[in-house]
Length: 369
Image 1: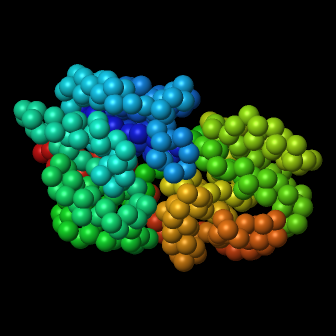
Image 2 (image 1 turned 60 degrees about the horizontal axis):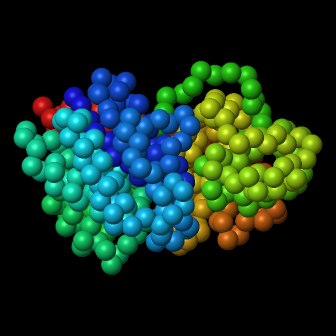
Image 3 (image 1 turned 90 degrees about the vertical axis):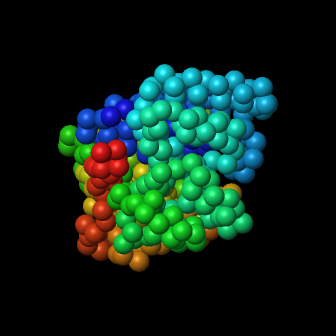
């Protein structure tokens, strides 16, 4: 079974990371997957089709720019939409998966609506699936439009979360109207990497891709001396998108006992070995923390009016899986207190469905049989 999988990341790398993880899981189950990415390329997550890249200029997501930082115009959009259609047709896929849209990525209608309309004309008609994370950014005024697009273009909506933790209704009130189209898969997370000894008993501090994580990382380094883990090594990962200026500022803060790096390919192994994780509450990092069953403190990103990470962190805290410091309340004292609280508690329970990759493959086979 051939799958054409479209993903667009605009600011961080979380959307691409989840799509890459799911594509790998499907390939492991025997699927042929063509992953088409519209955002800047990221080392270690190669796309099979790299579209001319675009990204959001800032946290408002209102202005899109190309790889050189120039504002994209209608002519640029037409060229990219044509490139996407050509790649889609060349793939001759049985399944079209579109990540997030119509629950987000409204900015990409210029190419996604033509893609979805083309999929309706193909004979035999492919299965058309929306792949969406556990929680979305609520858009109450747009919900009727979102529902109409989902009903018009999509055969199925796959929610990569555990309904025992959060149902889609929490962030999309019309979810019940989707009926049997809506299916939960469990969280999508990669298989554990081969364990090694590095990172054992460390505190692992991370901020996803690093585009917006400087304050968290600086605060963590300053809080180290006030915690019960002051004698441990604190490994701080700045992220692949951390700017050069921010990285230099972090280097000035890093003292004795702090190891500062941009990123690590063996993040999952470091996570499995560490005494404690301090991070934001993005989907991928949280899924990896839950997989490793490691004590953790989440500081959910809340800039630009974002609420998805905050809700995810609170729901997991309610289940006893994590400690949380709200971004607005982040300080050296509040973070140090949360670290000590996490250290004193038992490791989190294994109470979340993390089998999203295998379940997605199972559902796609069922729907195409």
